Amino acid sequence: MPVCAEHDRAVLAELLARDPMLCAYQLGDLDDFFWPYTSWFRRGDAVALLYHGVRPPVLLALARPAGVGELAALLGELSPVLPARLEAHLSPGLAAVLGGSFRVVSTGLHHKMALTDPGRLAAVPPAGVTLGRADLPQLHELYAAAYPGNSFDARMVDTGRYVGVRNGDALVAVAGVHVFSRAYRVAALGNVTTRPAWRGRGLAAAAVARLCGLLRADVDHVTLNVKADNVTAVRLYERLGFTRIADYSEFTLTAR
Image (tube, rainbow, N blue to C red; front, side, top):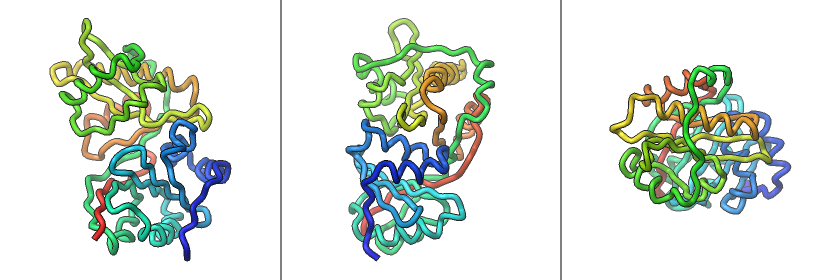
């Protein structure tokens, strides 16, 4: 069966909005801010996204257990036309479909979490100021020191949804977003970190609380991805009212 590219945002939005917490990243990528960097594929109700706004590009193929079979069939059709190197976020059971065409290396199990109990945010005093383009040099320096290898897209500060905590002029903690869309009412937190010497003081929690307050004025669903073995981060997010809503794994794929 030939690969079916999907170009109709309304069709994609209707399919993805059936499970907005699982599909928050994809829903957000329908936004004008991200849309030019996306390629979409569909087979029945199954949807896969190739996001090429980063290098290497990222394939997102996520489904609940009942939808894994149809999504697996879509990935089988899509496999021959994928880039020679890419990252992939895949629901359980899907990696094997790509094993014939790619060397598939797991980089870890992740939890998808969503803010389901926002009342817990009230127990954490928010802190931080909104960051912008003028703060990019400090952001890059902070990530190099505290979160090397993270996925930071400098364009995201233009959303006005990056919050930083300062000590004097020094940026010591930050919480940002990977996805933010007023149009599709979703956001995904990302690039949350604290300078090593300042950890253990609740600064990341305070920044996330401040950021969630900003986001909840504009979206219905605040979500995030976190590595399953990052117990400290998982507990922090649980304390702030996030719950685990699905698991997926991240992979690097290299064509055989």
